Length: 194
Image (cartoon, rainbow, N blue to C red; front, side, top):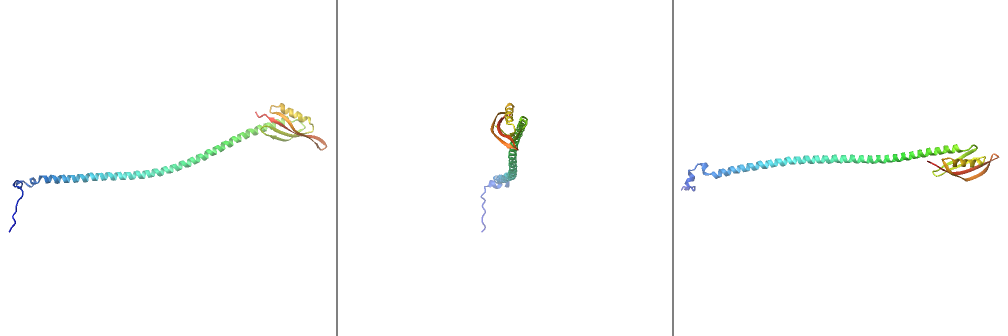
């Protein structure tokens, strides 16, 4: 026996053309293909953009790393420059202090040499200076003479000059030198520096 075929489609559907028979199916397939294509297109576009952004981010990281290295080098150079500047500044201060000290010493030596010249100009004949000590506040003069009156004359010359004041005896001693009496003396005077 042969199986009997039964057509479950209505007769109107059998009369339609194959395109007309399934219009909803064709649109569905078209929409499905279009949707899948659009999905693939947008997904691939997003992936390309992400890949491009990742490459840019990697380049930016490399540049940032290189910039950090360069910054470290520059900071090291800056630190070296600061150290050299500090050493140079200290050396400049030392040289400045030495220069000031030297200038003060030169000025003092100049005043001292002028003071020695004034003493030498005031010493009377037959009076010899054996020791001269100059301090800031006083000058100590030791010497020898045959005539004790010359010591008084010398003190008067010192007091009368504009370079010394308040001269006074600190010691006087008589001594015999080759059968002749000599007077050894020490006196103090205050120098006038200005």
